[in-house]
Image 1 (tube, rainbow, N blue to C red):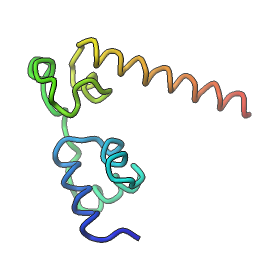
Image 2 (spheres, helix red, strand yellow; image 1 turned 60 degrees about the vertical axis):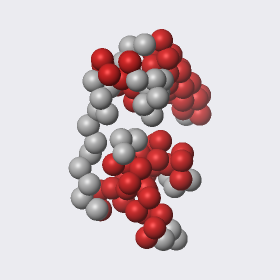
Image 3 (cartoon, rainbow, N blue to C red; image 1 turned 90 degrees about the vertical axis):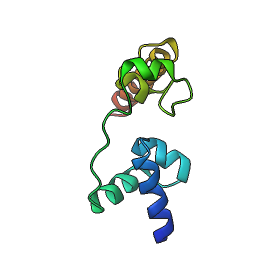
Length: 101
């Protein structure tokens, strides 16, 4: 369904430090497909994009202000808020699943 150039773009974005979910949002490919392509190509999983100090200082970093920034160690207000939003979405999903059972 997708061409080799789309797969190459996905791999390139992933290697630039973006998560599978971020790449999926940017390209329109599901995050499961992104992960599969990454694994098929033998690409090593990325490590945290940067440390606490330089992530907090570099507001232009693609992970800054997102959950991946929080996971990388940044505790600025934007990254903490991203974590709170993520936690609330997870809690809502769990509640909806319970109600659906």
